[in-house]
Image (tube, rainbow, N blue to C red; front, side):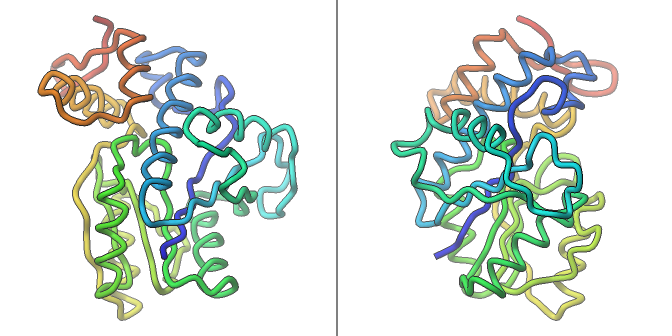
Length: 252
């Protein structure tokens, strides 16, 4: 069984989806609702799969992110955020993220799970990958039987999902383009690398516009969409529009 760490932070204005807010796609308050919706959908995908969900949260007021410090207020905020997606909000494990950067936090989590807890495989996902589905999590688990690193490529050279049966050198492993950097680190460690399908991630204005466009297209085609995210996008009246430089999110 794969243990999937969902890396989240308490949903507070000014701390989540900041590149999208800076691009004026949504306000800081709207970003909170959107972030919560995406986190719920990713949690649903993991819980529906054969994986174990570990909620790995970043405390809001961590003075030293390299030291694990319990923060009841942050933990309560994260539990409340995910509650609508979980039959039992206490069913997943909740642990504090440790590390001064995304690469460090992922490395600490994956290495701890593989080396200290002895899990067979460990993966990380983030709310920005709202289109993650059960079948993708399960497909990655199957591919891990033959490859020690399985990645979900994403828009802008990023990754939507990363799974491992062996640790790699995680220092700056998510440096852009992350899909290449992680692949290089896996191959440098003598490991086979495989991929699952490409998904949009809402980490950049372009990635968010791609997500919005796919949600609207899939809903129009009567295909599956992540329910909480799709509802949030519809409630906000968001659409993807062509600009001189590509897609951008506007209001319907």
